[in-house]
Image (cartoon, rainbow, N blue to C red; front, top):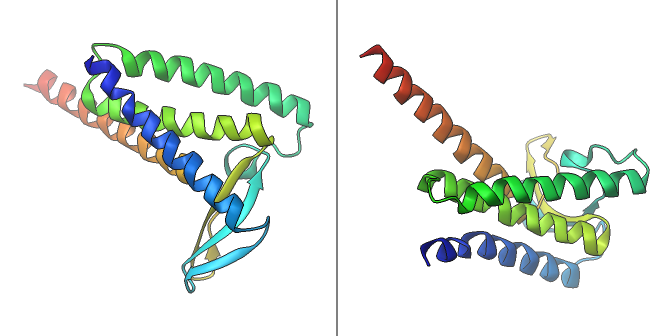
Amino acid sequence: MRRFLWLLLPAGVLAADLGSKAWILRTLAEGESVTVIKGFFNLTLGFNRGAIFGSLTGLPAPVRAVLFATAGVVAIVLFGRTFLARETPTGDRIAFGLILGGALGNGIDRLVRGAVVDFLDFVFGTWHYWTFNIADSCILVGAILFGLRALLASKTEHQRKDN
């Protein structure tokens, strides 16, 4: 039962991601932008047919489709298995839940639209960050949490060996 409750985390991420994408698709046309915080944050609808930061867009569409489908299935199986394992620590489970929910959201986009819907658009002075979405944010936060947990666990293990 407890592991079933953990499924609410990736399901919640998936719902927030798909809901926000449905809203932005109803609200803006591709390339259209609305300023939320002048000089800092916009909502700008775009479609990423590539991978992270638009990489791999130069590959033929069938190659991208096979590559993304394979990577998606592998990620979901590996992260899903670890996410649901009894021995997975809570911090890792949270990290993997965020990653899973985000991967599913972007994966569904690729299946349905052939591209990932992006709309969160930040500007820092003269620097313009890539447009992204809630799924991307959750994947990044999950990866950072997992990395921090791994570093802290390594440091703790190292300190034990020194004592």
